[in-house]
Image (cartoon, rainbow, N blue to C red):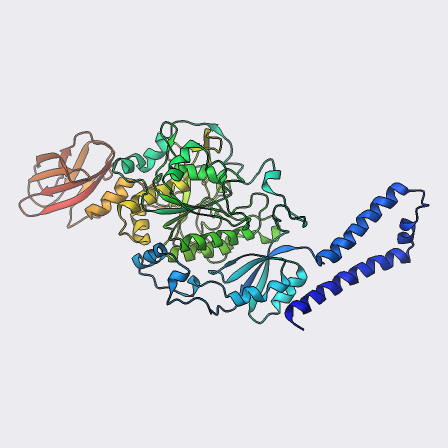
Length: 598
């Protein structure tokens, strides 16, 4: 007897056995007989019950489903390949994905290969539906019942089977029972309670100015030739409102994937959180909102199911990351986070937020090792104090983003580090309290949450990478960190602080460090006023020059002092905020250093 026949026989026997028990007890106690009797004095009880009972029996036998159908992750022990080979990667990766690996000097490995087709075929007799497979986790996400789960666990190539969600979302038109709601049947959601306290929007200039986005645009960088993937809850209205019209006119959308409902190709539906997040990366509507990377190519993926909270959403995220990787994505924006679940026993403890335990953090770490910059919100649990992160913000090798207020102070809701293993989180921060976004209706509003600080950093990173396509992912990260407002004194509230485009780009271009060189000291640096002091050499005369980030001379002076024991004092002209280059020379040496004007 084959596996399929054996499993069907097992399921049928269980169904018949259960129905036999029910009928036996009804006959034993005379209940079933009275229900069949039309002389009963309670006809209103008799006929509906009989109808429902018969419907139950027919459904039970006809569908051959004897147990509740839930969603499971089936993990495999091995990864044998017959169709694909690392020697021929173009079968499963695009040329852009391979170019990224070349830039990062990364070798192909088994994680790049798909799950074995023979394994997926082998578990089919035990499942109702195969939703998708994950090559990074070497797993399949399926709909099955407990009988099917036990049957799969006995297979020699199956490592384990994890329960990851209650019930399943049926395909439209499918009459199978579902234990969770469709999102369009839900009137309100509590997941983003902080973030959906809409307010009248102020000018968006502040949030852009904080990161130097306007300077980035003036330099001609808008994320062109960079590909950004956005994982979220859906993107309704994005294909119709004017703020995103250039994305479609210029054919910047290169891929879309609905992982929550794999049988649906479109993503322009469901919850608007994704549309709001995308507006902080892609919107181009002068006078309302012009975001940092409106010239970038884009991949959209629906991974968040707002009607429930189960670990399957972590698997959805990893599946989307694999899809984006195969298309050659450069940056993933993830304004999502996981900590509490509808099944309390699955809720993560602080000790599990070590970057290695949760499935989504493991997936984010793999993405980072593939040369993808993962930018994620740090979470909105700041009221809980230290170590209040959500996954995947705890992952190593990615960029977790906190939120600041209009005074550049940490927002009260912004989650704090450190991770369970002591690493600083978040790494960077951006404006997240009353950030300006666009809704699916086209309405411009102000919302709060780390979901809205993360995409601003994503847009900044895209512009920087466009300006320096030779940078590896790690070089990009390092320059972002070094441009942070508190790079020399990072903390668990804001990490390295608020980054800035000019300082991240031109500081690297000039190749100048902040550290003291050969006994030279220039202070204050960063400078706020116009008084600059320089302690260098033993001469009493110093020729001073100041150039802007493009190397243009803007000020020079011959400075003098009474003795080598006191510094030179330079009265600078009023300078715009940005990064400058100092060149100072006496009879013995020439010193070149970077000066930051706040």
